[in-house]
Amino acid sequence: MMKMEEPRVAVRLDEVRVVRGPRVVLDAVGGVVRAGAVTGLLGPSGSGKTTLLRAIVGVQARVTGTVEVLGRVAGTPSLRREVSYVTQTASVYRDLTVGQNLRYFAALAGLRGSAAAEAVERALRTVGLADRGRDLVARLSGGQVSRVSLAAALLGEPRLLVLDEPTVGLDPVLRDDLWRTFAELARTGVTLLVSTHVMDEAARCDDLVLLREGRVLATGAPRELLRRTGAGDLDAAFLHLIREAGLAGAAA
Amino acid sequence: MTAVRTAATASRVLRQVRHDPRTIALLLVVPCVLVGLMAWVFVDTPTFDRLGASILGLFPFVVMFIVTSVVMLRERQGGTLERLMTTPVGRADVLLGYTLAFGALAVVQALVAVTFAVWVAGLDVAGDLWVLVVVAVAVAVLGVTLGLLGSAFAATELQAVQLMPAVVLPQFFLCGLLVPRDDLPRGLRELSDLLPLSYAVDAMRTVTVEAGAPSSVWVDVAVLAGFIVGAVVLASLTLRRRTP
Image 1 (tube, helix red, strand yellow):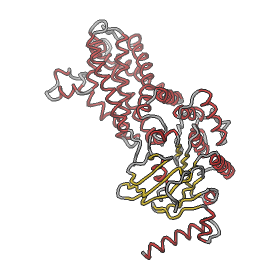
Image 2 (cartoon, chains in turn blue, green):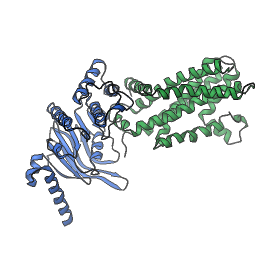
Image 3 (cartoon, chains in turn cyan, green):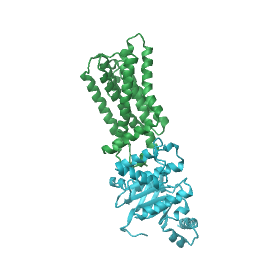
Image 4 (cartoon, one colour):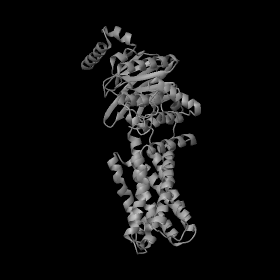
């Protein structure tokens, strides 16, 4: 679908396969993530979204095929400065304050002194927690904790942000704010790969990848998918694509 | 591995502990209570003076082993280790950070326990007290690093806690406290040479009976240091960036 070696490609996948025990979690996954765009990764739970994201950030074992990130093999040490990953369940220390968490991750990102303090402050403003720096994470609500986790990924100005369902449990206003932030980041050249299963979020992505049972079912811009399927909204479009694939499978 | 990231990790771990004052209290108070209890049990006999120093080395080892195996397991399972593995932090940074943080706690613990044992419980040793402190810290740090390694073999906190008897009790039977190591049956005597706690008890026994800072203590401490380095290296091999 996409041509090889486009200059503005952040992630390139080819024949990616991951086997966990007897189960094939990902199979023959290919495609590209455009640099400076927001790409949505969609699919029901168990479709392999998290595994694919983990392969891209280089922490998934037993990956075969090609996973190329910012021109390098996924997992290359130099990528750890340029790629930030937010896991599905918030991965911050509950027995530290919000500020202590972020200062630690800032130090790991190589930030020091006033640069670190500014980065922490900026990240907290971005996720709407500017006044909670002194609060213990354990005392925050679930949604707030996942925002702390997101803020930790924004430190150190990564070129690629990989976010696994970052908006689960957030109220609509905050979700809207975060998606605006994602778009803004993309405008400054940051590439975002965001998994979600909320369709109104899918509509805000520049590109979509639909994953089902470890395979890529469809890719394209939201409008393109609507046109191709003739559906009125993305929900209907995906149903159409899934049924189509099911029929093709039955015929084969 | 970088000094900055190791130090950042160590101070992060210490900040976590600081938010848990009850753990700090247990770390500092429990060895004192146990030493005091033992002194009371053996009141009016020379037994406390004979074994007190060894016990001073043993309790911190056990306590540190349990605490670090659980704390490290939490890091492995809470998702934070997975995140750390996507950052520039090295695996050795993480482990040395933990070792330094709990090593610092071990120093405080040893100072408190030795002070209590000597001035409150009336422990009388021939050697210098600072040697006693150094050996106690070395044994506690050994407990820290074995705990970090042990966490790799536990999938739950329940399992982590049960590692303690599995790792510590065999060493306790063979370290020379119950039966002098030279009197152990063949096979067990040789086995005891391979276990780190034997060297801890040897060192403590030397401090108990020999004046000053005898050189054989430093040989034992050097062996303990070797075990510490070995445990960190093995633990870093169990930290995988890529997991299934």
